[in-house]
Amino acid sequence: MKKMKFSVTSVMFLGFLFLGGCKSFYSPSDVLELALGALQENNMEEFTSTLTGPALGYYSNVQNIEALRQRLSMYKKFETDNLRKLSTQRINSNLSVTTYTVDVLGFTSSEDLSQHVGTATTSCTTKSKTEYRAKSADDSNKITTCLISEFR
Image 1 (cartoon, one colour):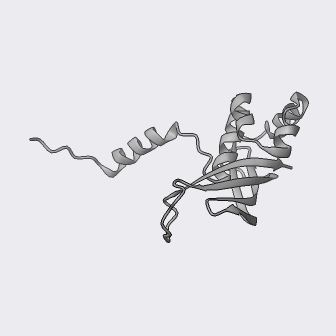
Image 2 (cartoon, rainbow, N blue to C red):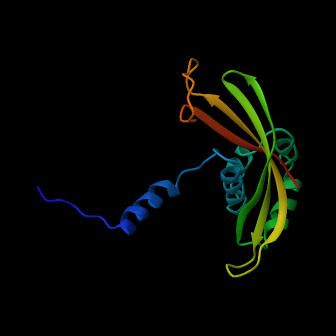
Image 3 (cartoon, rainbow, N blue to C red):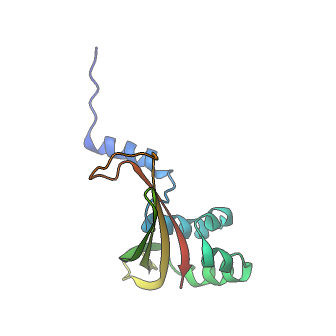
């Protein structure tokens, strides 16, 4: 049997290839990246799937989406910065909601300095995978879903 050898680079490339198509709602940064990418691609269905509460109501209006798109159109790339936890509300033993704010930075080119584009508030819901879970130090038995509740 012939052994196959892979370089670190080829393994990393395969990882990016498989993960590149994944859409993630697992963290505030992930959901913001998904929302901004959808907005840049004019994918309104995907954009609105990242919203909840006041943001969903506000961006249900086409004029508000167009104003946001116009505001962001000068930027080629976005990053998130300064993640701040505002609160955690424990609903029951299997469910909690954590609210974060995070700054969104925009870049007009790859060499450009970042500019503050806005601040997003996200609501992240964490649920246990099983109703009767053993107490453990790790969070491997939990699922977190984040949505944008405000962007200003």
